[in-house]
Length: 397
Image (cartoon, rainbow, N blue to C red; front, side, top):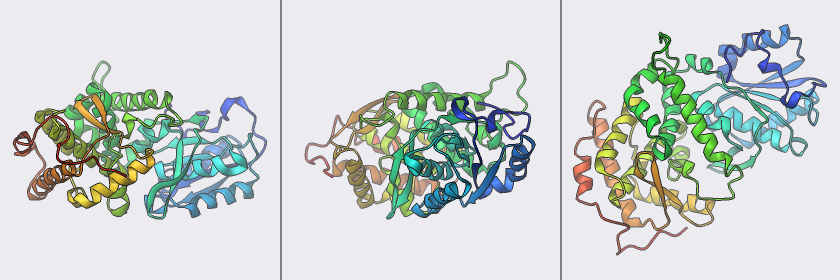
């Protein structure tokens, strides 16, 4: 991590990975939001440091995460004369831009190094430690992609101070995922400080020495937790991954709702849906579901969406995800906050039951202000059992 990354006196942004010396012009790719907010400072940085660069600005948003976008980056790499090693491009922007530039770099000359500078909370706590790049294709999220971790990633918490609150909330959706699967302390931070984290953009404004710094701790715990999980399975040779929690049902919802939902918003709903499945199985206590829904809402995220109340859509989502997991469900379910198990026998009946609860949550959030769960634990209490219903066979891809 660094600070004041666009200060010409900070050498981090212009440094090459592994200490190589630059042999020519480097490409700096920004998304439109970054160019509007920081473009002048970025250009001043490279000018004052006498670093030869050219610029490419791309639109953000998942609807622009396309084959055409990464081909545009590849064409620009040729135009500026990018070499095999000595002139790695620099990607400054959100997760969409990082994926597009990473995809181009991974294929250009069969793979060149590049530098990530994530400027969104989602990009900093999720994408910053990932090896994956990709673009959407034929209506499917990240259907085309590569594994190509950059040799250098720079994280400056100050860059998210200017983000709209909605982007902060979306990023906290991924932090919620990490909390639920492995970090009860992180969940406590979100539960206690949720509204403050959003309004303060995780900057810990006004904190005196010795005061709690929940913003810094949330970012640190989310990043380190993700890095710990990915490090032992970077290339996904093991398809049982707890970090896929929140990403089983959400991809199809996110793509069908474009551009309505942000990534972290859909992930948070998937976290809730999967928690409902766990309560129905008797794995998770209803009071823990209540805490999860309440914390989700305190962050400012919706717990449900009409697509999560459609059993047909949820079954399609699982079937598509199973194809990505070699025709296994490998579904992560909670046994407690911070503790999980894998299941591979989820049934259609269980999905039918869960979407009813998601419909309850949707009606509740549409009826009034966000608050604690009303009635949902009692409703689920009547269904709690141990394991999948015996009368229904597991879903198949």
